[in-house]
Length: 178
Image 1: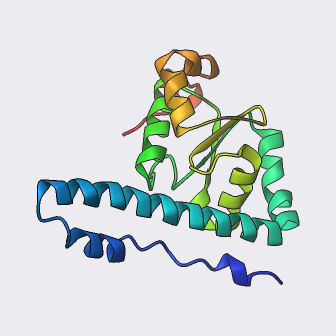
Image 2: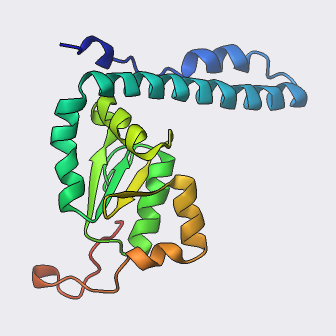
């Protein structure tokens, strides 16, 4: 049923790290280690993204059937590593902080670490290989770097709100980092 490609091993950064760390005996060695390590991580991310796209293609109908309604029913959708309460990556944490500050609500999040096909779905839809991805009114709004740029120039505030919560949490901000 095409599920074989979707069982991707977790990326192990420890093996290349141990190997590269052995060469870190001088300042020049450490600089070489750092640049090589970044290249290894980029290569592993690219490999994972290719496999995730392939996985998505094998289960496209099922994934589309489950995720397309998310776009149709929600103005702000964030594909991220982890959840708003527990981001699993620094880039995802940074985006959550930016969206919290501008009070971008209502916000729906999708955890891309739940299945590689979810990553493949958002990469295919956005054209950007590095998550997190924010969609606004069904259109790709930006990845981390684009959102950071929009945050710095004030454009990200346009999707936020100054409205306070109602009901049991009346007067409170709708999203918060505690």
